[in-house]
Length: 355
Image 1 (tube, rainbow, N blue to C red):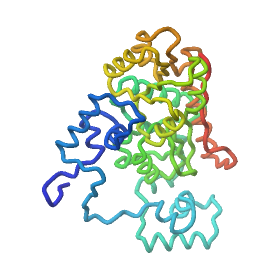
Image 2 (image 1 turned 90 degrees about the vertical axis):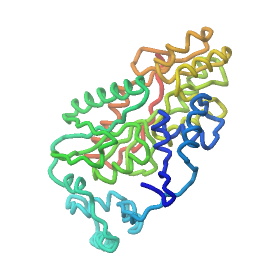
Image 3 (image 1 turned 90 degrees about the horizontal axis):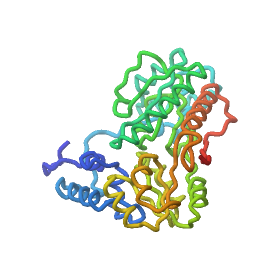
Image 4 (image 1 turned 45 degrees about the vertical axis):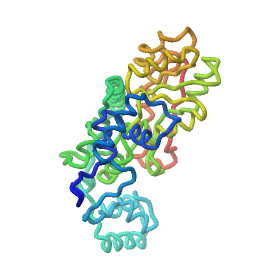
């Protein structure tokens, strides 16, 4: 899309793609966030791209397109949940909804010209024990390895509950035309934009893993960052730490980690060379590595007892957040949602085990 001036409408996502970093990292650089450690090379590359492409923070898009009415809009106007709107537009007879509410929602849908997506209509059909698993691809091989390992654990956990798995990707989530219906979806580390596109197209129970979403309707499984940091400080015998991790794609989840760190330092490992230089320059620091590969690359640069490694397999590392536990909790919550066991909690925070 072109502006009237002829310049391309550049977004943070495009800057991030060209710079080979996450959108969160671009946002932190543009906001001059000093509480997040980002390599000077990365910072300079992002700022140079912004200047070269004419990106202006806060610039509004010019578009003639009419804002599409969403299920959230309908639910907000009707004063009901998005789930209630979904049940009504799909004519679900197995859910008790008053006739007054049903008429009110349908009237608002008609007035606002709201039409559920074709995919949502498909999902109103019969069920077949298929679960969608939506995971992204990262620019960091070690992070992709974690996604793959988690997908395997999710598949095993689903099989133990007699479910089959269908792999979905964020980039094609809106274009997919499923030949089979899904009973639910487990999504992993999606951006807020990707998650809301997903929930808009798939009217089924959704469990978010390694993500924080504001809508209480959805189930969530993620790390208790406060518990991890407390345990790491105890092992390191230090009140101040530097937490090293790959950037999460889900910005609220990254914000949760930052809030848990409080006055401690968060270093986002965009470039290994810059990270090693930083570790070398802080030999007296106490470091917590959120990934085994990061620890293997950097821990030898530190004196003994100055680094803690978080692993994903029981019985390994200094602290462990087992992927198997993550997968089992996610599938257990999804099955409860499918069975409409409303008394089940919607959030599970994983606490660390000692390796």
